[in-house]
Image (tube, rainbow, N blue to C red; front, side):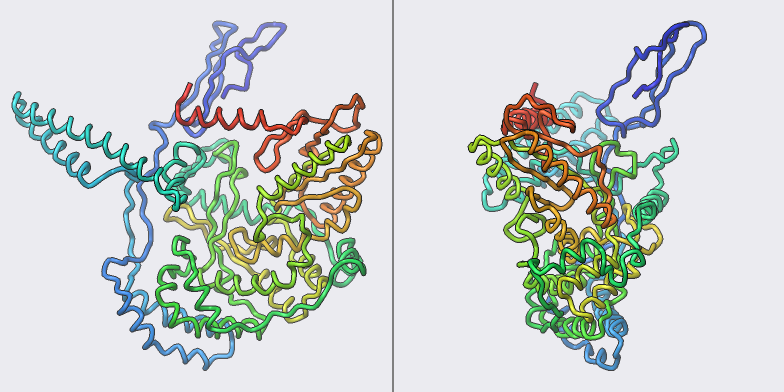
Length: 596
């Protein structure tokens, strides 16, 4: 916590006195004070008045206390959704549907402010809770009449509570450990003991200009401005520089080359059968968007609302206009790593209206059929049957095979910053068109990307709405496939070496017996990748490139080579072993469960 010299002499300044912490959130500020009486200075830190705990909070939610599915569906069946046909504009259709739906929803599941108390321990039981209340009651009696008899009653009940607590803990973890068919329950029970990073957005505290900020409204405003304005300082890829529709842009030229796959794609209208199926498959655990329409209640009324929703979606596809209300996202900041007081260490995750996610899923189903054969097999993110695990397994097995052939293997790992947020809409649309998307489909996606609005939610407090100028929303259904399409042509530029991509993590690797030839290939291919990032307006920190050489060689490479690098959270050393990673994981677990 101390970063200034604490002992000063005529000839030297030395930092001797330290204050160490493993959690900066417990401190407000630290510093050094010169006493003017000694060459040693005093060090200090100001702590929060109490340890950080999950605070109780108020939430705006729907009350299901008197909810009846039968009555709800009956009233939905009587709703005059057919009056939507009186309007041509898709936004008018959606507004009519939402008003009819919300009127019935407010009657059966009215909105209310609920006070959520600080979360109790997960192993609390009714019998234990009742015993605690009785113990507290006996304690109050003892404080009024301090007799031996009253204290013995309290002491006996206190011991009963202790016994019930031990039994509750034992039974809770035994039951969670014996549910192999429900891994969600297992990990929800054990994750709090293994992961210290989880936190509620309600408890975020920021430090801005050396001032600690705890007001939720101000924090929400700071986050929203940061998320929206971050891309203002990044380079713009101008259409004027490359011609209409970026015709002379290197990416567009590469896509148009004869050997690269192209075709023709047009969004097709949907039907109520598919919409109903997607509504029934909806994840009821997901949060609702700004419209406060719960995924659970959409699922309950799926059979009734499938036709009007299909009507709205088909109108949107026909008119090439995306409903404005579905472009409004509610952003939750998620902590990544390092300093929890810095807003730069949080990433935005957007929660969109649940009905919008149904629409996006329909578009993704159609896009996947077309782009599935176009996307490189080495793009492993956001694709069925692909994952971090499959990507890591493929690369390590390839590297092992190369080493078995007696070749040196060179690996350069690269990381992009704010990859989703900096994508420029005109260039993305130009790539979609180059791959074969027709004019109407491009117009629909152009409207989807333009004039998007977002606000940040911190607990029960919201920032104002701001316009998003660049990027695809993280947390959307359509965003990930648009990102994959955007980076796909990078594989057309990296021809000699191999490239693997998982979202914003990219690895270039090559094998060669001659270290000079290996170095030459890696340098050229990495330079091509850096040029592609620059041409496409992506942010890459060249100083964070990591290089690893597998195999023994006395050759001195022109770039820094590490003994081990991190890929997808795994540490891999130059012997293609995981000893350091396993040791690190064991150490973390030992620290969490207090094993010394």
